[in-house]
Image (cartoon, rainbow, N blue to C red):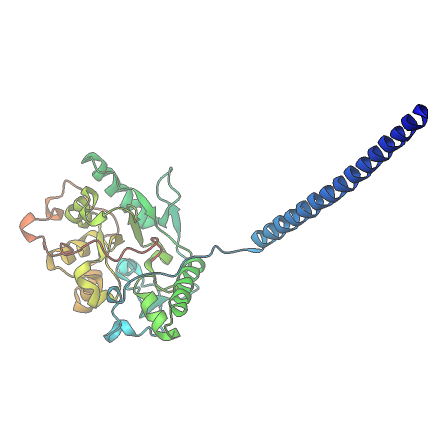
Amino acid sequence: MGKKIIANLLLIMLAAAALFGISYFLSYKVTTNAIKVKNAGTSADWAGEEQTAADETEPVTAAPTLPASDVPLTGAAAVLPTPEEIEMPAGDGWMLVLINRYYRLKEDYEPTVTQVMSDSAVYLDSRVAQAFQTMYSAALADGIELTLSAGYVTPERQARKFNQLVKSYTDMGLDAASAAARAAFTVSPAYCSESNYGLAVEIGWPEEDFARSPTYGWLRENAARFGFIERYPADKTDFTLFHAEPWHWRYVGNRAALEMREQGLCLEEYVGSGSAAALIGEGETTTAPDEDREEDEPDDDDYNDDYGDDYNGDGYDDGYDD
């Protein structure tokens, strides 16, 4: 009798062990399958993200947030005309060629550009580069380093930047014509920018309050002696139809630059005044002046203090490709 009870107990224990084993096995399989499904989903998601990233060719840029008051849409600024194609003037006329929303050089014109400084990736028209190097050395002697941020820009890059800005404005609800006009106040269309010909240099960085920097003060005082002018002064937007850019300096030759500074004229005013034609007829120099020549030195009393003093720091764009 006792042996039978013991045998029954053993059978019960074996049955219990078998049931426990079967339960554990089934639980393990379910958990493993769940983990596999989860991992498979994660891998699929990652592969999809990787493919999406690989397919992206252009970075996504947020729409601009320029207030409407920064971009006047009245008068000439409200219209972006089809620019007239012009030839690069012969002789010294290249220095005073007017490039803006109304005039562009023919697309077959290819500037001869050269690297400005050995430690910089900035290129300029070779004649402008030579003048800048002379000005750079003079500034350095006065304790000012003219940090290059931009120079020659390819028309293709110019077009991308302009079209991207136009699209951003249309995404904000503007019609195509208004978007183009508003964008052109900040970024010039391709071939309508002096940067596409290596005639202008950008100095400093957007995050700086450049108009109040010692570098800007030095340029206002001295740049004309080396043939450079502040191309887009804050008080001349009615003529340039472009926002203020105290960092943008165009080479026009030292004699023209001195006259423009002394008379308080921007390039549009100067070219329209007839002074430019007379100057070219006299044979404007294409090199920076000798610092020892007294006739090239500006008189402090002749400097127009209103040439940009009202600039309030507004109007900086997200880059220097004008």
